[in-house]
Image 1 (spheres, one colour):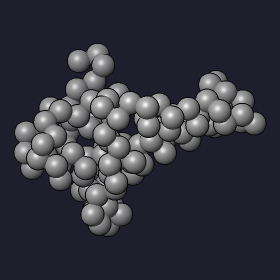
Image 2 (cartoon, helix red, strand yellow):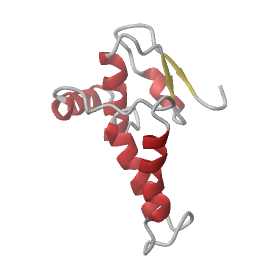
Image 3 (cartoon, rainbow, N blue to C red):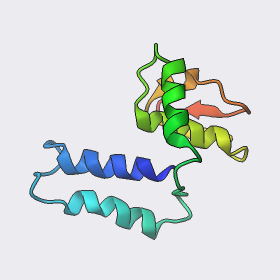
Image 4 (cartoon, one colour):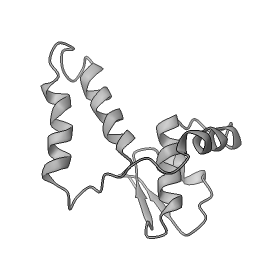
Length: 110
């Protein structure tokens, strides 16, 4: 998982009023504690090389898709690492991306 996903998760938990009041960051901060406590479950990786430029190119190529910038970074991360054979996501639309090697995109419902 690229480190930007951890940041996006923190932001979602921090500012979604359905989850926790904005004055209290403890729930959101727990994401980082959970990731640190479970290094065998999640492999938090640095952002891929040239990801800013490459993610913009990816978003332009897939202009008809609703990919976020973080989605683009995730796709680049999986594409860059040939050891990645499965991408688990809640966004099934990521399956339209053409990987350079065999990567199965699966969702909880799949």
